[in-house]
Image 1 (cartoon, helix red, strand yellow):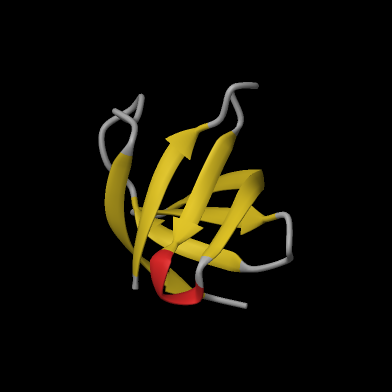
Image 2 (cartoon, rainbow, N blue to C red; image 1 turned 90 degrees about the vertical axis):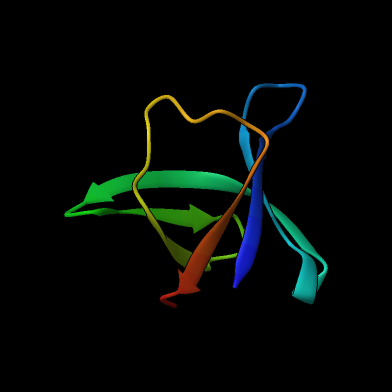
Length: 67
């Protein structure tokens, strides 16, 4: 699924999932192999392919839901 990553006014990473009309803050970010696992405030875990660091935001990326 496509998700948009951005930073809010407080500087926290926010994920927006358009198909679900869901916008949540990232509470945990873990690098694994070639992916980054993002844990959202609602408990969802999304895996995105690791790209350049630091991320140039806002950015739309392909993600898959783990939990």
